[in-house]
Structures are given as C-alpha cells and as structure tokens.
Image (cartoon, rainbow, N blue to C red; front, side):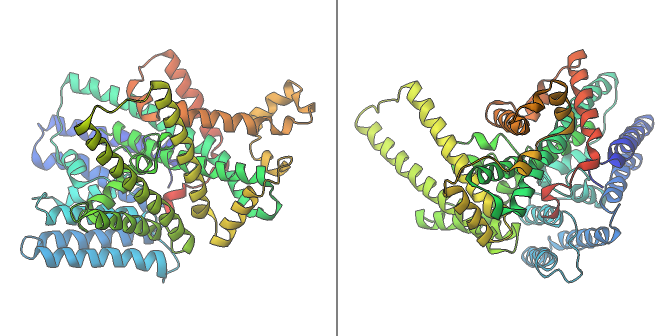
Length: 498
C-alpha cells in the first residue's frame, strides 16, 4: 500500500486515525493505567504491520523475523555486548546483502534498507549504553511505524522510543492542541502528495522517455532529461518524507526532518547537510565516527569521508554506475573539505597578524550564487550515473549534452509536460494554433519548479506557519482533489525499492 493510493487516502488512514484516537479516549477514561495504555500503541503496531504486509505478506515475514532476531540480541547485550553487536551487524548486513544483491527468492522486501538501518541504530545505541528497558511493543512500533518503514526518515531510538512510551495526557487544552497538530499534519501531507503526484510524476515521465530514447536526443533534449530527473528525485523523495511527517504529526508522533532545500546548497558539503539528512547522520554516527572520524589526522579523515560515500554508492545499487556516483560525491566532498581546512588555517593566521578584510555584501552574494549554480550542475551530472542503467548509457547522455548539437526539442519529450488540465486551457484560449504551443507547458512547468526549488519555502516550514482559514482550506482542497484525480496515472515512489 502506498500513500498515493485511493485505499490509503480514503480507507486505511482515516480508519487508523479514528481508531488511534478512540483508543486514546479509552485510555483517558481508564485513568491512564499501564495495562490499558498499551492499547493505543498496540493498535498502531497492528496497523503498521497490516500496512507493510498488505500487498505482499511474504515481505511481512522477513520484517517480523528480522525484528525478532534483533530484539533477542538486544536482550543479550548486557551479558555479551560485543558478541551481540557483532552478531546483529552480521545478521542485518547479511540479510541486506542477500536480498539486495543475491536475490535468491526473486523479491526484495520493500524498504529493507530502511528497517535494517533502523535496527542497526537500535543495536548500536544499546551497545553504547543509551538504551535501557525497551518493551517489545515499543520496539516493534519503532521499527515498523508505517509512515517511515518503507522510505524513512531513519529515526534514532532516542528520537522515537520516548514518544512511543510516553504516557498520554488528557484535558481540554491537550485536545485543542491535538486538533491544531492534526491540521498542520494534514497540511503537510497534502503538500507532499501534490509534490509527488503532480510535480514528480510529470517530471518522471519526461525523464523516463529520455532514458529510453537516448539515441534520439539532441543536446537540448539531454539537458531537459537530466534536469527532469534531478527535480523528479527531489520532489518524489521529499514529497514522501513530507507525507510521512504529516501522518506522524496527525498521530502526535514527530519524525526527523530529512530534506532542507538541498539544491540551495553552495557546496557539496552543504548539500549533504541538507539532502537525505537522516541517512547522512546514520553513516556519520555508525560508520564515519567508528572509523576514527576526524580524530586521526587529515589523511585518515579524508579517507574516512571517501569510504562513507563509496559505501553509500554501493548501498544504492550493485551496478558500477552507483559506485561512480558515490565516488563523484566523495571526491568533491574531500576536495571541498580540504579547501575549507586550508581557508580556516589561512584565516586564523591572518587574524593573528592583522584584521582580515571582509568582502562587500554584493560580492558575497555573487560568490554564493555562483557556488549554488556550480553545485547544482555537478549534482545534476552525478545524478545521470545514478539514473542511467549503466555507465555506458550515462556517458552517452553526457556526450550528447556536451556535443552542443542543439535544435528543436523532441516533440514527444515535450509532450510529457502537456497535462490534460492545462492543455485544455490552452485549447480554450486557442493558443494551440501557435507553432510553438506544444512547448509552452514544458517551459512553464520547469520554470515554476526551479523557482520553487531555489526561492520557495519548504513544505515543512509552510505547514509550521499555516493557520486555519478560508484561504488555506481552499488551497488544501484544490491541491488534494487535483492530486486524487491524478491517482490513476501515478507511479510508486523512487526510493521504495532501496
């Protein structure tokens, strides 16, 4: 079951939301006793397991088996911490390797990387002594909580477990706060749904056409295909995370932020501080720091950074193109870090000898804008290797773009942007008679999406400041109905198979 489906929007989630708060009312009437208090979370656990195993019960067997092994190892942690951790890491990484790369049963459980990373984080925090008693109910819900189980964000135990174990509180004021939280969560969910269904899938159809017809593209086509995938991936994945956070907020459970306008980054280090933030944090906390982090000299630090990106590339896929993608980011990350280290040392020396001159504000803005443009271009090029079926095809697209063989944009490529609802308006206005009318929507949609990326606020910040009112209610209604009417042509989320 996916968020962008009729079953989820009109049946599953409304029933879960109603049942969840009904259980909360029962808890309040019983005085918040320990036994009855588990009803609310037990209901949510059953809903989460049902959500995950809805279409493929065999996936649920893998999830439950993995959860059972990891929870058992957590209980052995006190007696044999190193042995339990080593066994758990061997089991989790082995399970991930078998399903993602060997594929012996011809299926890969959805979200296996995300629920595996969640359990690795649980074992690591247990090994470090940051977790004490964790009930099976809290643990099961921590791993399988349905908004995040398939694509994250990857919540740390210290972020989520206290919320799952907290004693629910009652009272008029709390109920009022709940309604406000539900409103903001709904607002965020609808914005995320719009990002996925209307923006990401439109861009995705153009990207899919381009990668399926590389030989027919000229340089202009190649640039549009490259840009379409770059934007599709962001709106698809961040849209999912917005929906997940919105669902959690409606249930009174906060999930960590995963995207913070990454394409506004002025260098690759800033990009990775804004893109898939919980994965970056996971690799930093459980790979980079255990390898020594920055505690063992510059060369070792740079080597650790490069290794993290190499592992990230391999995690995303078994093809060489993913290794190339990881190394491209890793090498630029290391070079950027080395340059910043050099700048910091030079600045420190200047401060000791004389006051360094500050750049004029206009020059600072120009340098920043130039950095954003270069970073965005580099990330675009790297995404080609991420999306292409092979390195050969990635190089073919780069060769096409670099060949400067510009001409009229491919008719079929441009047609992927001609949404029926917009094209109808063009026909009513009789603009369709113009020889370039076929390209109007492509230009307008790409321009609007780029404006949102570089100048717009994030959906999370909009939801946080949203106030109930006629204007916001009308906006939500239009975006929701528009998205739902487009469900018949939507695709699954890109990261659901990772």
